[in-house]
Image 1 (cartoon, helix red, strand yellow):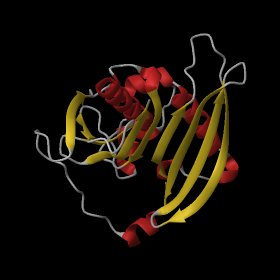
Image 2 (cartoon, rainbow, N blue to C red):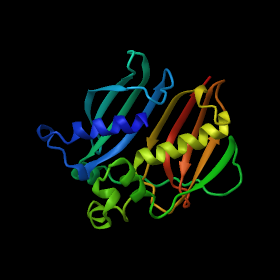
Image 3 (cartoon, one colour):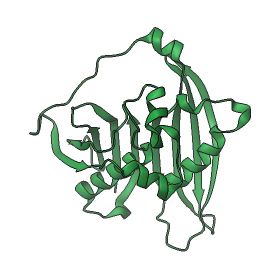
Length: 231
């Protein structure tokens, strides 16, 4: 819910006319949230978003946005960060494409501690768009999605992140969300509605830190270098 509030404000920032940003070229780069306290039903939350940095990369420009979420008592609820990639087609063509590394197989590989599959359905993007009001064309129109090079409409990044966060939290913390401190993902490739997605958890590097990745049914990485920190 907090991440959804953040994305709503971010979209208002991105759609500012002075920025002259083409929404067809805007994609998720990275996203992170750090919880300081759990909000309760009835709380009034206030979010402050700032553009922290804009810098060039090989395939375009990266915009870094940060946010602070406070409750009605000015108590720190959460800190958020979002990196938005503004693609440059000329730079992308010059950089070329990297070979896709696939994670295949159904058994556990070395270093893995779990694989948990969760399904999506062909109308999930429509339900999410209706419930949240986030109706960007690549999530709602097959025609416009194909115009920007996608195979069809794709799932919202925040939706995929939320489902993965729930899955990892249930697996690691037994649904004890109060122990959750930090959640981070880097977006690798779009998730297609109807795909079965698999969360792969790796052996903890230290107490309270677990790394994971999310792959589609073809073994292609949807979320890369994900991490969860907990108490």
